[in-house]
Amino acid sequence: MLFATTLAGSLPKPDWLAETGKLWPTWRAQGAELARAKRDATLLWLKEQEDAGIDVVTDGEQSRQHFVHGFLENVAGIDFEHKVKMGIRDNRYEAMVPVVVGPLRLKGRVHETEARFARAHTKKKLKFTLPGPMTLVDTIADRHYGDKVKLAMAFAELLNQEARGLAKDGVDTIQFDEPAFNVYMDDVKKWGIAALHRAIKGLRCTTAVHICYGYGIQANLDWKETLGAEWRQYEAIFPALAKSRIDQVSLECIHSHVPPQLMALLKGKDVLVGVIDVASDKIETPAEVAATIGRALKYVPAKRLFPCTNCGMAPMQREVAIAKLRALAAGAQLARGKYGAAAKSRRGASS
Ligand code: ZN
Image 1 (spheres, helix red, strand yellow):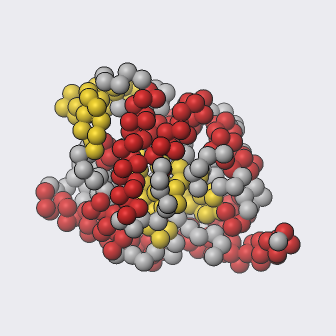
Image 2: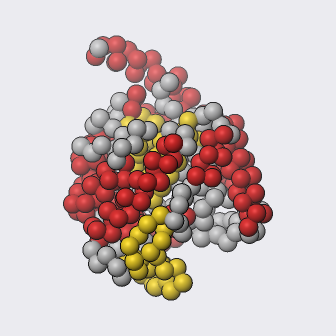
């Protein structure tokens, strides 16, 4: 099927699970009650995604407080008690971050419970997200390794251990979230992709990297104002990603100032095209979604184009996120009717 739909990863947490509208929400419960609420929320979102018509679903990241710290909490060698203030994403925002104080190792499996639970409750393809090594390095202070690349490779090794476990749990796609790739473009080429390769070593499932301009929060909106009329960060890194062993690249498209022709630089890769804006509560129409797919088709072959959201939807209102998921699936359906036959005849002509 052409234009199978998916989402970047996160979905809003229901108000009975955690505070809403926040990137670092406080859980409403603790212990067994919290575990039960996480399962209930995961089930709810699997059903909502299926009902909307999404093809590759996620657990909506309902079991983690934050996309980076959900992983870090299960890593030994980190001091969470004495957090330090640090500028992250090249000082775009300041955050209180934990500190690496010793050799890093996993305390055990990180996401086994929620991955197995999600797998048991949907027959759809299941995608699971992990933070990428470069983004982890950029969201933590280091007093042990003394070298960014060494620290990144140490994280990549742990990510690989967890990713292998997730593949065994029945996850179809493992996606690494690397918003830092749009900030440190030279480092992506020097060691960012090498660290990703370390993280996917030995994996036989589909692998993806998500690179975006962040959630629709104020610090990101302000940063985007400084990026000029055309955002060309992707131009610096896509040729290297095209040569990488990562299967899929998830990128921003709709309402983004990224020139769409940059997608052509990802030759040979599946492209997860952002057709849903997460920085606005305005619901896209199916026609708008189909039109965005049409624009991307000029640069991405139909069989490699997967309509997706620009980024995670964690800070949104639940009703808005549901409406956007429906628009995503309906727009992809519309695009199948509009562009499907042409794509087929092109394939016929080239074979
Ligand atoms: Zn994102």
